[in-house]
Structure formats: structure tokens, C-alpha cells
Image 1: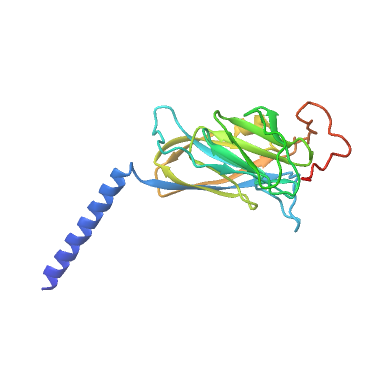
Image 2: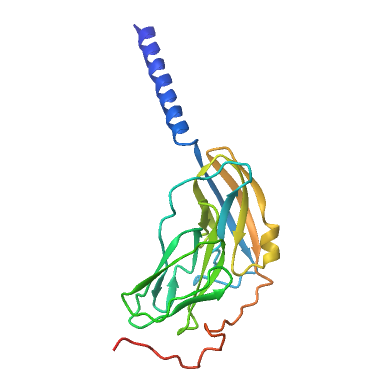
Length: 246
């Protein structure tokens, strides 16, 4: 009787494994987690407690030519709010083709625009409770500003892959549901120079449940803050009008 029960149990386990394998194949293959940590050197940004702010680093995996192609539905809509005279979030990574909403949550007007690289647009003045969309239809880095409030800035990184993320305050990042295959790892950070970012490109082979890329170090020593102009290419006036709703 024990032998019969063990045989039945073994048969059940084998059939379960076969069913699981069939489901994985039907779904297009197993998916994995890619993770790592960003470490900032000579950081220009500090947290309130004195620690280093390692957030805002865009990380993405581009499938190599001839490798596994990532097919899927249209990318979901994104969102950057205008709140307390800030853009939230400050850095957003999206897949090319994504439409982003820009709702105004402040009790005064804003004028979101971008004339630097990436996607160029000007949403004009609009008030609290209103929102205007922009579709980002090509890869690139888009620097966003408000034509009324010079302290407002944000960055949208549009990439040709659905496998991307942004690092957290402690520098940790993870990309879920990455199909097994070969990829090129790319990074972007607004306080890192282009030469350094190019040097950090690397090939990544994803073939296990968890792929740990370890620590990647970014040096901010060469970063020099730049003052941006308004959408007309002029300096901001010393006192900008409030543009409050009457």
C-alpha cells in the first residue's frame, strides 16, 4: 500500500511539473528578476540625515539584435504631477510610445515645456484641476521645465524596451519579468557625464530566476549645474507673475 501511495504521489508531482512547464511555454518562456545597487561617488545631493541620495538613476535592458524580442501590449499611460511647485516624480523612465498626463495640482497656473533634446513640446498655460497629455514617440532624454517657475524641473527617459526601472534613495533597483536572453545594460543619471555613462554599458545574460548585477558606481565629480532659460530662450524675470485663477 505504501508503494502504491508513493507511486501515485510521484505521478501527481510529475503531472504538475509537466503542466507548469506547458504553461511557461505557452506564456513565451520563463521570466526573471534583474537587480543591483547604484553607489554614488562625490555626490552633490544629500538626504536630510546626511546620507547620499542615490535615487533617480534610470536603468534599462535592451534586447540584443537577433536575440529575444520583447513583444507586448501598448505601454500603459504615465503621469507627472505639478504639485507644490515641483514635478512629481522628478525622473520618469518610459517605453517609447507612452502617453504622459501632466495634471496641475497647484492653485495657480503652470506652463510645462521641453525644448531640450528628446521630445519638444509646449503645453501652454493651464490651471488647477486641468491636465494635458503628451505622447513620447521616439527614444531620448526630455528635460521638462515650467515657463513660470524656474525652480521646477523633471526628466523623462524614453527607451526602446519594456525592461526598465529607476533606483531608489539607497541606490537599489530591480527589473521584474525579464525573459531569458542577452541584453545590453544602459544607465542614465542627470549628474553623470555622457562619457562615464557610455563606459558603463555592459552585456548581461539573463538565464536564472534572479540575476544580481552587483554594485555599479557613478562619479558626480564632473557635474556642473546649469541654469536653464525659459521657453523663449530668455532668462526668467526676477519676479514671475502668479497667474492665479480669478
